Amino acid sequence: MTASPTPDPAAPNPHASAEQVQAAYSDTKLAQVLYHDWEAATYDEKWSISYDERCNSYARGRFDAVVGGDAEVPYGRALELGCGTGFFLLNLMLTGVATTGSVTDLSPGMVEVALRNAEGLGLDVDGRVADAETIPYEDDSFDLVVGHAVLHHIPDVQKTLAEVLRVLRPGGRFVFAGEPTTIGDRYARLLGRTTWELTTRATKLPALASWRRPQAELDESSRAAALEAVVDIHTFDPEALERTALAAGAIDVRAATEELAAAFLGWPVRTFEAAVPAGKLGFGWARFAFGGWKKLSRLDEAVLSKVVPRKFFYNVMITGVKPPAPVSL
Ligand SMILES: C[S@@+](CC[C@H](N)C(=O)[O-])C[C@H]1O[C@@H](n2cnc3c(N)ncnc32)[C@H](O)[C@@H]1O
Image (cartoon, rainbow, N blue to C red):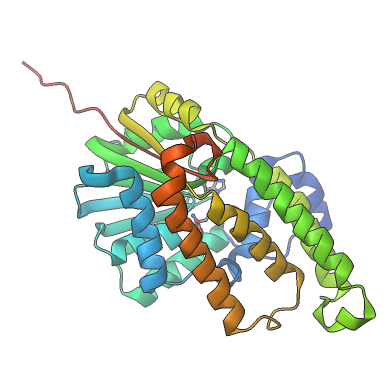
């Protein structure tokens, strides 16, 4: 049976047909669903996502870094857009940021995994397949809306933020983290491409044959990278992102950035890990990678953020508030 180029919007589709992949090159939302449905089952492993102290403190750290002392935790009802496997909201809930949650994503496969993760953690969470540009919830439904690494996938960011403000109650807050800055994305791609080229060329040498991934797997990674170029739509200048949030109607808008030295280590490390066979790098490597990233993140925070303009850092986060309801006389 030939699969239709348009997948059933409610069902996960981890094995896209060649016809669907072709159609996705000119349809960004179809590309999002195919790419992320395909990634859903292995996403937590690929990005080392867990729901323990390490990721609890990472998620909470991003939230606190941009919201600072203005947080009103615990928020009652929180919504996540582009939840993926639930990394951001579930980890935030585990640190007491919100009591109940709703996870949403364009990819049915991702919503399925996020709900399974939430259930395993005993969290009070429901979920829906939803496009962030047209959020299927009533006005004033949530106290907090969050997202991580999602805004750069959405065609109309201002429309999305206006939708976020519609579903927030007056005074409610949004927090989006993990978005690429325009300058950061340039050096990250260059570092990634260079590391990939060097590693895949070096592992062609007979002496390094055991470090070479099978050609079929390398080819699949290259095809995924091509689709990645279709799903990654935006990069952000922090000031321009603030202007977009203000134009959507938010108040108390603030963008913050992080990771400069840490990104110069993180991107080559992640690319190298993807270019060699799984299992080749042991615990010592994992300790070096995570420990090194943490040390350089501290350097970024304590020193570089004081002297380097924010647009040079890799990650941008943004927060804002829905204006209070007008008082009726
Ligand atoms: C890079 S992943 C991030 C997932 C998760 N937030 C995380 O940080 O691990 C981006 C997610 O956004 C979703 N997405 C892309 N476009 C979307 C849209 N228009 N509306 C809702 N979700 C979308 C994708 O399906 C994917 O799960």
